[in-house]
Length: 157
Length: 263
Ligand SMILES: Cc1cc2nc3c(=O)[nH]c(=O)nc-3n(C[C@H](O)[C@H](O)[C@H](O)COP(=O)(O)OP(=O)(O)OC[C@H]3O[C@@H](n4cnc5c(N)ncnc54)[C@H](O)[C@@H]3O)c2cc1C
Ligand code: FES
Ligand code: FES
Image 1: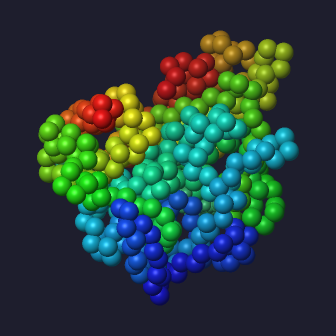
Image 2: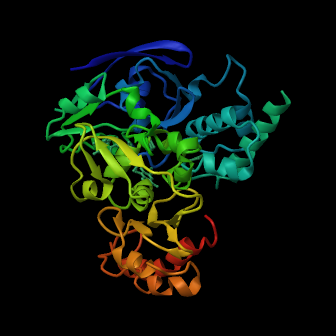
């Protein structure tokens, strides 16, 4: 039997039917058509599906979908404000922090969760914040640099 | 077919548990199984009951709700002594989800927080009102846990150390915790626990006995290091061989006990 749930997705109300045991990643991608969170492993190991739930980074593939009823879910798909990219997206683009881009939406959300809480992180704090996110392309350094750059930019704004 | 049921209160959820049911904490272990169609997960029971997510004084103890997450423990004034162990679990997103209750049930090599709770001599309050020691629970791992009950250790008395190959996130080669209680300047009644050194987190009676009456210095702890893995059947797995665990355990135990190289 499917369970109807509603929640807020990137500021807008979403209403979906979820399968018993269905996970949030599936619901976002198939139910809501938000393809920004990626499926890498379904085991919590890669972080490609990282989203924010009520302002905290969560692993969407390990989140029982019905537990987000009434909560606020934010994904990388909601970062840009119309044509204006989020400072993190600009920093990732300009710092070549994305190559194949598969890890990028998860990295962005892990980084956003950090900067929302700690606008001036140290390099070690950035390292820690993205420690649950794997990237097979960049070697991480450009990603860490981009997050620190975005923090500077946001601080100046 | 998998069935998922939700109840407003933990008590109702407890009453609805059947032998086939699993209570959902953060889902970091259960959902992994569900995603890979593990037929052993037949029924998931969950509850948004805020009582499960509270940390509160309970007489001379502190009651930590089984649904409190690692993030909820980190930096909480009442349980600041658990921060190093809670921080050792997974990456930040996992810590926002992973609960205390789930950690008590986590299979090898997981259970880093449980190692610290074991060293502290924690008790559990079960949802049916019974109390039992964490040690007794780990022997069977049955029933729904409502809260973990701990006493605040003296400052610096609780030591925790996780050994992992990948930093900052990585599974345990081993984790270790010691509650170093003293009488007249000597160790007395100290408790030592290991994780990833057996099927569940476990106490190490040989080490505890060797520490009784010892002074907390290199000479005093030498007999304890000599029996660091005595009586244990060490796991042989892709993370580390039993041989490796046996060889390095005394080194890490020394660092833990003497507070060397804080992690
Ligand atoms: C990528 C990744 C990294 C990880 N790293 C670590 C690590 O470094 N250290 C570590 O210790 N663990 C680690 N884990 C394992 C796991 O996240 C933690 O052990 C966590 O604490 C489990 O809690 P949970 O709430 O998510 O459990 P769930 O998946 O919700 O439940 C796990 C088990 O516990 C039972 N359970 C849950 N709550 C209760 C309760 N109140 N009473 C009785 N039974 C209950 C469930 O029925 C189930 O059998 C990792 C997991 C992943 C996916
Ligand atoms: S797909 Fe969720 S962590 Fe890999
Ligand atoms: S850019 Fe390819 S995985 Fe990170």
